[in-house]
Image (cartoon, rainbow, N blue to C red):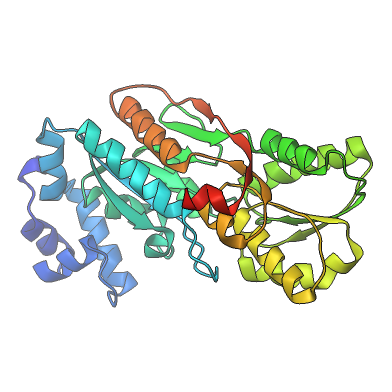
Length: 333
């Protein structure tokens, strides 16, 4: 049977369920049994059914739709501005290029299998994905990328292939450089390094940069994981800062947590951050950090996704970074 002539009614008949049930499965409604999902999905595969939204997209000459997939740290006490910068950068560039883009959060698809994710995005006529914050534990989402069903651009994660590109700064180099600049001229040897996530690609690269500098300078570095959480960094600082000369954090958000702890402890320890978010300027202290242009990174990801959707092959793109000393005047001027 021609897939273009297959209707949702045909799928319902093949599966032995109501048309409304097929619709619920296609749109990932809750409270649909696994047995029913299996029946409907088997019928869809057997008949080669393509939902009307997908068929319309395939027949359209317009630029394909894309999805910006984000992992938002829901446990941070302070709102993280980085995802918002990604969203603004991606939407502005998509509008400029005449692309339609939607935003999807990891939590919305966390319980889905690869096949369900594919159907979820296909049901919305998505042809390309920009994925931010992919970690080693996101096996299912990695499977989605490797399925080849969509053109993909991974922000801050490896995975270059024929249909996927990676875009990022040189995190190892940036961490090495900012820590070296921060420590220059200071007779510090005992460092508390608050890393990001144990399973994070970015965290691993930044830790490598810190370890390389520690080996070169003979530093004694105590490494603890802060999970990019202001609260976790605050607790770690309260626990370990008394016996350390300085604190280096793998994100500005954690650096803010460290600063708050030091104020509460009524002791001084210099703190170094990473990311260059404007929120850092309100911490009340000057701070060495790495500035990334998150809007530009997202805009470049949209440009790259457009190139892939036009037949380009995946590539590794390294974006620039800057070492800065953030202070209050930087965010009010």
